[in-house]
Image 1 (cartoon, rainbow, N blue to C red):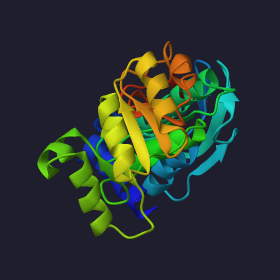
Image 2: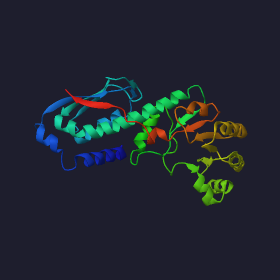
Image 3: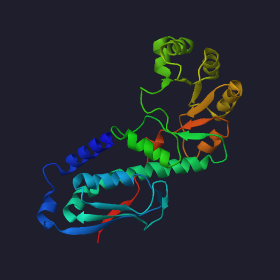
Image 4: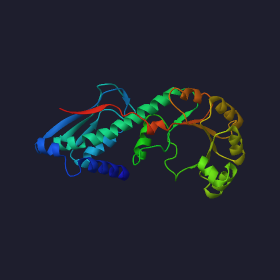
Length: 274
């Protein structure tokens, strides 16, 4: 909560800076108002508590009532929340609240589409570290709201040996050996592979999770057969809604989708004063 408050405060400072000139000039002081947050398109709700926090940081006296819970679906015209307080404070918080809410709803909505696309398979949709700087905690929360699963949060909470690590370490086997010697027993080792030969080496070296990076569907099927359920298998690279079902049907356990957080479309939501 401290991190999120700091983020919101920085966003408000960026927008308001020395003062909202238009509101100060036009809106009478201490004029009370009511407002509605309205969905303009179908979406999965995420981030209402964050939007509420924007307003209460500006003025603790503001009342924010969510009309839906995060994770619920809204249709065009649905009132997401009602807000009551000084008109000037509502107007100063409007853009920051909407920016955050629209993005988080966009992530949750996109994630839900991917989750629905693989329904009936064993594959789980997970996110990546390809997040907006400063917004990672919020964006990963929105992924969970949409039915996805979080991959590692950062560089500090999981071992993922990628192509450049392999080069720097001197090979897959050596990279895994060094990682195993360094980390506690509570952590797993995931390694990125690009060829079937690398898959075989990673399996022999004791990887816990093997990532199949930018492989064809046939290569994925073969890799899954080679691994034979001994470790978890993650598919990554070139994942989109048109292809994700076919990837899931190769038998992989995890499908990581960078687009969930680096390319979501902001949902259309407006705030209207009554």
